[in-house]
Every structure is written in C-alpha cells, then in structure tokens.
Length: 159
Image (cartoon, rainbow, N blue to C red; front, side):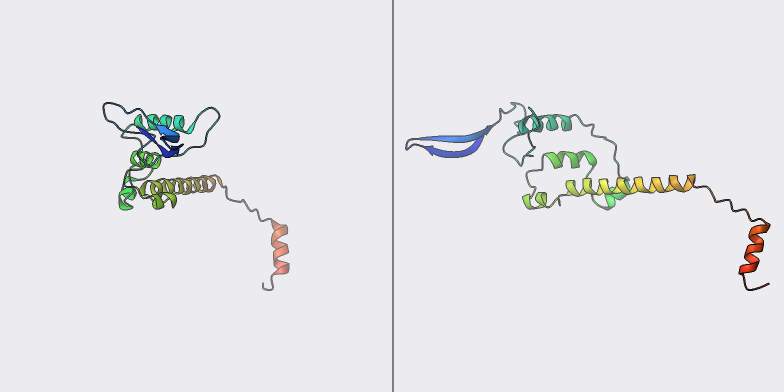
C-alpha cells in the first residue's frame, strides 16, 4: 500500500512527496502504518516513528488477553470502561470509527479508562500511605508529675 500527497512533476508526470508505504501481509491485510489513524511518535535516537509503531504493535499483539486489571471489575463495569487490553490497543491504534475530535480531547473510552485508572491508582497509593503512617504513629506519652500539677493549680481559677 502506498500513501502520500500526489503532485505534478513538470507537465507530464506525477510524483508522491514523502510517501508512506506498507507491504501488506497476505493473510489478513491489516495495516499498521497506513489506511487508519496512526500514532505519531517522536524520533528517539535511531528509532524512527515507523519503527516505534511496529514495536508497539508487536508488543500489543503479545499482551495476554487476560492481562491483570487494575480496576475492580464492578467499578469498571458500572462506569462502562473498556478492559485494560482493549484500552491499550485502542490508545495506540484507534478503531476506524474513532472521532479525531474525541481523540484530541482525550475523550475516547480508551483514553478515559486509562486516565481514570491512573487517578484511581494514585488515590489508592495515597490511601495506603496514610494508613501506613497512621499504623506507625505512636501515641504520645504524657507524664504528669507533681511539678506540672502544681503549675496547673496556680494557673486555673478554680479549686
């Protein structure tokens, strides 16, 4: 598959400037780099965005379908959030019917699920930290001796 802006070259021929291409797999014909909404990653060293897309795609294909959920199932279902695996797939390779405006606003179900998951885990971490600190907190031992009693008697207006 070949994709790009076609321009006139001279008055006779056409050319594609900076074409994107992909050799289709004979089995399923699924594309990674063309014919869909594709993620655009920044070049990192020698790793090009196209290489990154391929690596992410391959990693997602290797995810176990029963990848551990971070959200309680009843909460996930009540909020109508996709599974973690489905959200990860849709984040990097949105479905064909995904709306660009929703993607740009981080408003797709996949994005909302991962945003919620991050906030939920952050709150759970804070709660665990508070509970741990409360369990470690020792009561203050206040010892009252005769000197303190006498000082209090002098300050207080009653007998």
